[in-house]
Amino acid sequence: MNAELAIILIACLTAVACAIPGVFLVLRKMALISDAISHSILPGIVIGFFITEDLASPWLILLAAFSGIITVVLVEAIQKTGLVKEDTAIGLVFPALFSIGVLLIAIYANDIHLDTDAVLVGRLEYAAFDKLMIDHVSYGPKSMWTISITLVITLALLFAFYKELKLSTFDIGLSSALGFSPVVLHYGLMSVASVTTVVSFDAVGAILVVALMIAPAAAAYLLTTDLKKMIVLSILFGIMSAIGGYYFAVWLDASISGSITTVLGLIFLLVYLFAPTKGLIAVLFRQKRQRTEVSLLTFLLHLNNHDSIEERRVAHLHEHINWGKVRAKTVLELAQKNNMITMQDEVVSLTNKGLKFTEKALDYIITNKDEQIEDMKDDFFLFRG
Amino acid sequence: MEQKIAVAVDDLTVAYNYKPVLWDIDLSIPEGVLMAIVGPNGAGKSTLIKSILGIIDPIAGSVAVYGKPYKKQRDKVAYVPQKGSVDWDFPTTALDVVMMGTYGALGWIKRPGAKQKKQALEALEKVGMLAFKGRQISQLSGGQQQRIFLARALVQNAAIYFMDEPFQGVDATTEIAIINILKELRKAGKTVIVVHHDLQTVPEYFDWVTFLNVKHIATGPVKDIFNDDNLTKTYGINYKVAVQK
Ligand SMILES: Nc1ncnc2c1ncn2[C@@H]1O[C@H](COP(=O)(O)OP(=O)(O)O)[C@@H](O)[C@H]1O
Ligand SMILES: [Mg+2]
Image 1: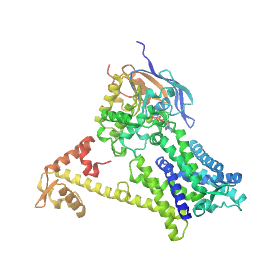
Image 2: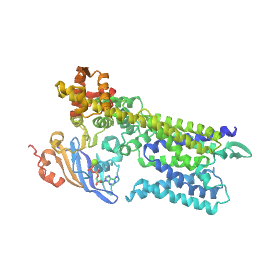
Image 3: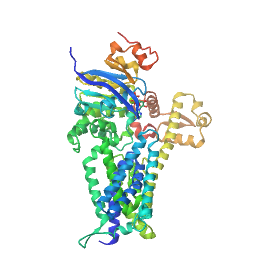
Image 4: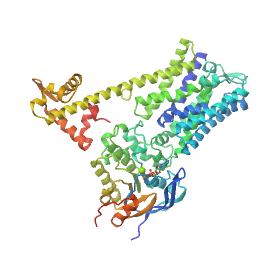
């Protein structure tokens, strides 16, 4: 296998392995905890490295993952005292553990290949050359093996416990009442996140691990209302950024994990802006239309309440209802487009359809009876959500 | 007439961060009643239900469901949590939420199939929400969300139903629809326990009532104990609720 392919493959496998726990972390509003884990496993890695002298050793992985779990336990213990909020607790725990790791490196590991730079941004470029050798036979890059094994375990757990994870993420109370212990599921998820972080860490560094867990899931969340699709989309975004980031790095002659992080950021930004219903532009557009629709309703109610021709003159709109020309024009056009009013000699009257619409809307506003306006929901944002 | 006890709570004390929110509760609920739990905000109503269902560990006391610990009787109990306790922006549909009611019977790892889907659809039909089965749950109104939760409990097909404020944020039509289903459940011999806020409707909707405010104040038939005295003990101020009979 050539180095280029090996690097891309390692990046893609890492992306997929991170995206899966990432979805549940995002849905549980625990994005920060992945940041905490990725930093506080450092002392575990350093101590593990002293013992095993091998960054890809399974013992090191378990030891480091264990310090990830300790982070979670510490954060929860501090939070349980009720003195500080969760984000404060996270902010207290991970710098402490991280700095212990950095100190350990500085004191004891100056001459080994474990420097803080590598820890933060990883060494994807070298990961491809660090081969697994057994009896002088090369079995490909070590990280490929560790990440593949982690990914297989993650997928197996996801398939086995999908329903339990979904339930305990959505409704922790029912999950507990039905006997699916939220504590077990929580620590299961945290263990997977910790192990994934540790094995990804050597190749891609702490910053990219966090980005690979959170950004794809956050982008997917804006695009779909189906958990399975959210997982698939997150995986796709992860793979896209791994491949895109690699070529971006080659083109710029820059760090690969840095480029992957940049591509991830770009993907999220694009989705954040352009997602069809939850994107920023869609939301702004909807707000504007809602404003217009409220004005339309106000206008129709006014027509409904007043019979005299004076009250129904177009000019009157500006003076009496106090609308600017643009707004009045938009509202009039919207009403006409929907055949709710007719205009004759600058005098507006309600059509039958307009009258019905007005009465129905009025009824809804007074009684809040949802069934009546089901059909209006398709045409008018005002009555949705 | 000897009546079976559905739920027995014994000397139950529950605390959050060492601050007791339920003090030494003794309570027994006979089978087949439709019972309201009333009390002011923060009285511990939700906490009582959660500790009966083993969601919160009490610091003292015990709970029995038909004479055995709750853990052995999970299949006999259905639960509707307070609506605000879940994230309605979660990426899932109405049908999928109702299907969650079947998870308990399935147990770990096994997945819901055609049979579970059919049960969920029937429950959706029963609460008048079949037309909304594919709708993302954030796109439902407050009343529709409550109906979905009720459908999910119906799917659990239990003997005892715990419901935490099922009338919260629902319109009058939905309230009547829900109470009719609850009355049907009682007719079918089920025990239904509901955290309720509107004192005016207690005599009309329920046959039993529990007054709770950190301590247990009274439990019994509405016609016997729903009076000014207990209301005053519970709410601290004099409640002039006229009770007929
Ligand atoms: N998770 C929690 N942590 C700390 N205190 C809590 C928690 N849940 C509830 N409480 C407190 O316990 C008391 C009882 O709460 P709850 O059972 O929800 O009351 P109710 O349902 O009667 O309104 C309240 O004072 C509330 O602030
Ligand atoms: Mg409550």
